[in-house]
Image 1 (cartoon, rainbow, N blue to C red):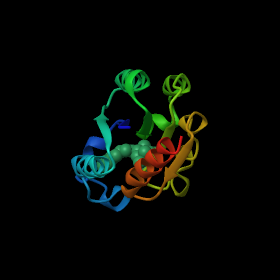
Image 2 (tube, helix red, strand yellow):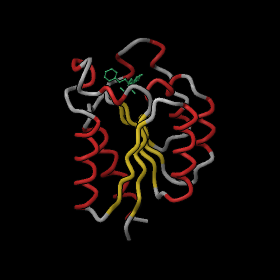
Image 3 (cartoon, rainbow, N blue to C red):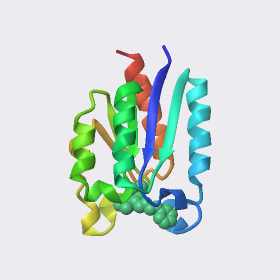
Length: 147
Ligand code: CA2
């Protein structure tokens, strides 16, 4: 069966590869998307890859994932630490959720140490760099295919 995984990215992640390479690496968001689509194609899965700088739009994308997706991988970026609305949207899903952070949020400023999203997520990956997305997709597909 082909699983459809929504991979959602929050604010400022469109800047990946352009600034702060010491924290976020040199890959662009398009590079990440291409890698994940290749991985999905090899594993008979489909990836819907999105980025938005707007909280309401990210919530709409979560709703869409709940309607037609088999799993969600989300890097909520700055909204991780602030958004109860995002947390509520994720709580309403009945498909698996993996939260991904490129950087190790626990090694950074204290305000990044808490995540509303983690309370709704099945799993959290933080600090693996952009490989975290691929690890998340691999694990998601493995779990979906074993059920
Ligand atoms: O480590 C992550 O993936 C974060 O979710 C990234 C967020 C940050 O607010 C979280 O605490 C951790 C920031 C995304 C901003 O991305 C940029 C990329 C390049 C240049 C500037 C910002």
